Length: 226
Ligand code: DC
Image: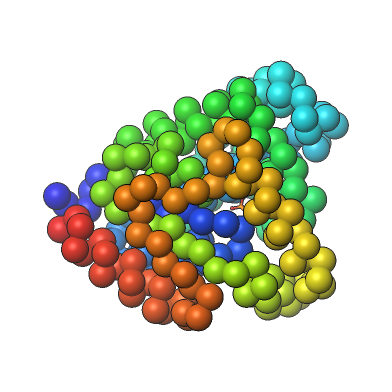
């Protein structure tokens, strides 16, 4: 099979390096990279903007249905996500948006709306999709399914470095607590919980640098898809 319709699924918990690895892999194979978490962050942002209770599935679902999505490919392979014509960029990285995304993404009706959109995009292919349920729900047909994992402590340390590089303040203990809270919620929710697909290849990145992770993924892609 050519790379035109290739679909690579990368799942795993918050802060494990899915985006950095996914973008590099997408560039190598001429694919686009989609962060599905960013779509949930957009939904969380919208719910906060509208002042909706984050546990009100009916109202968050209505807000999700009304979203007009836009996607533009950037030179680094990633799809820039526009919500109702607005690009939120780094604003989406704020911790309150992450928590709002984690809460609203657990609402079954609201989630179904986003899931539908992501399934359509997966069927079109030509993507590296990163998220929590890509290999299990969105694209169970993907030939390459990766599940990245790392200890919460390692992920918190990486997040501190990332934020500092962006000139933002970072508190290790707070970030660690936030990561653990999100892991707990994302893994234990009823709808599409975070878990590896039965046929996913699990890569523990705790002791691996980014280059090694990218290499492992590309070896797998070459083995499975070409
Ligand atoms: O990957 P991220 O940290 O940007 O994701 C933000 C939240 O969105 C995360 O806590 C859980 C949710 N999410 C999800 O439920 N399913 C996905 N495929 C991606 C993210």
